Image (cartoon, rainbow, N blue to C red; front, side):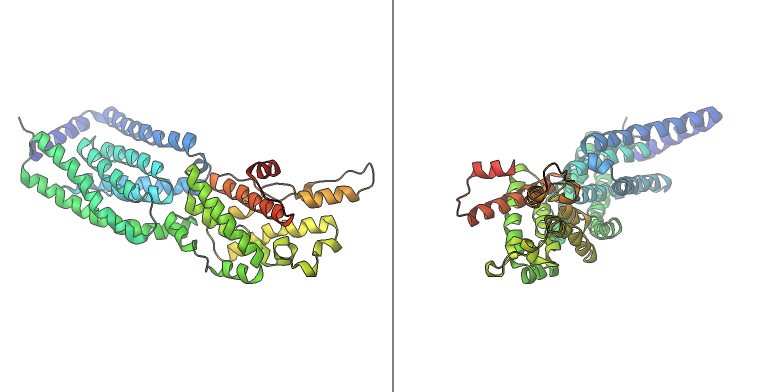
Length: 410
């Protein structure tokens, strides 16, 4: 016997009546079961974040953001159950919005895994509604795929067709399987089309809001800083042309390396653009900005003072970046491109000037750190060192080779 929408509603009403007649014990059991159901689904995502996305797990702000993204469609699912109507409101549950937000703000793997979790949550809230779960998962997966390499906000609107395609495939397959009438299929597709239209528009606005509230930077935001005419870079070019030239070379090296190992090439390049902006305050403290005929400022000051001046470009750079409201993702490159490395040249000079038997504290001769904690920041550290070594070799009239660079880096 074909189960119509009316028969399904009657069966659900009967199940609800049985629970109510079961008394307090049955109600408590139902509540515990629901909590356990949700807990199992959420735990799957917690385990994923804890063991595969450790950086997210250690960042409370990002965990709060993910929680909101997961709760949003769950709340819509709850409302779809509470509103009694013959219209298929379940296809207005905006699972694709969560899929796109997770992909844009984090990465495609987190976006797809989050889509699975959201689809399961929605199905559980709607009484194990498999049809909605599969349709939402299909549309969400298409949505996540279309924004995984997002470079333009207008690209979001290309997702409309793909989201509808995801719903169309799932709704058509499940409807034909159960022999649903064409009018019912048409109603469901109309609501799915509304979802496909609403989701990219809402995602567009939410990305803006999230980037402002959580000081995070999606690839969309990073494209705004992939611009050599940014005021900080123009100042760097005017005040420290040698550093600016070094910066452009490091950015090119780092971007190529990121592409080669599958890291975020855009983030790597933008981070490299701003890694040395602190040098604009005292450009002549750095050899690439010194004019040969004018001598070296470090010849007339102590090794400790020289190390301090060199080290200070990191703290100055962070202050400049914060004053210009650069995203935290970009600011991280400023201290991390040196990590806690020793400023070897001036440390060695200090050692040579010491009396026999003296002990030298190397703390003033180290950068403040922290060490790189992502592939992207580590790449810029290596690119920065490689470019500086190659330039030094060129000044000594040496032709740098791969072996020589590796030896110097070690």
